[in-house]
Image 1 (cartoon, rainbow, N blue to C red):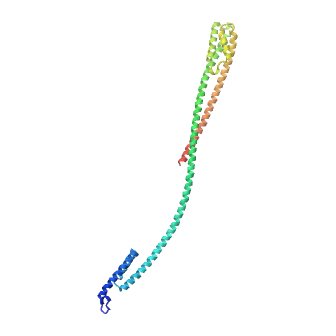
Image 2 (cartoon, helix red, strand yellow):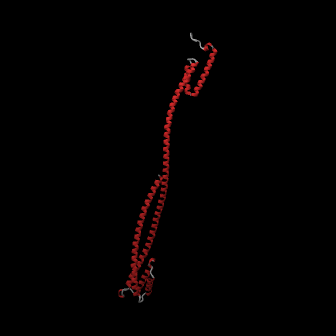
Image 3 (cartoon, rainbow, N blue to C red):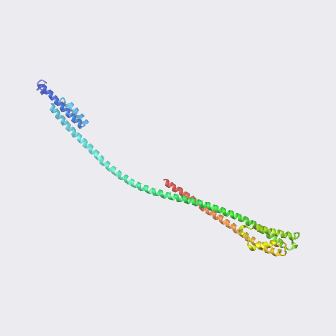
Length: 302
């Protein structure tokens, strides 16, 4: 104790001083436990203040001062926490409103996307059906071209065969007509040729005509009877009258065959022109179909 100063209770009574220190220790321990529960930061600050004020004032004053410091600290922390709470509350309100708006927008987009998906599915189905129809049209077009080509080739082959037969028949008719005309001349004009030779040549010429007749232009019964009678007459008295009759018939047949051949050529030319026109039209249609199909497939892939 300092000179002139009143002795402390602990100095006057050592045992009471020990008890007082023990009570202060317990009180400090309780305060520290309370601070630990209140928060590590607050406890640290208060502990520092306790250490600063531990050396001054009475124990009761120390406790009172600590409680005051604790009150001030709690009030300051309350203000800070309220400020932090207000800040985060405002952030939460704004964020909640923004997220709600984003959710509404996302839902609207989902509905729009759902409608787009349904629309695209319908479009894909339509395109698939159109492509299938185009494939069928392309196959039908190619089939039509193949059938038209096969028919044209068949018709042309038939025409060529019939034209050859007709040309052979015309040649045989022309020769027979010349022989019959020559044999019908007066005997004085025949010079060195005998009647038998002329008759034999005429008979052979008429037989060649009969053999050269096209299947499509077979002789009728009357014509066959007349030619048979001519061939049977030979060098008899009836040869000359029958020769004139046969000549007339053969000339008519020649004119008919020649006209038929010309008509067949014209028909063949017309058929060939029609075929070329048909093939050109089908080729243009096929090109358009394939182009349209490629475009539809491109749209479907997109």
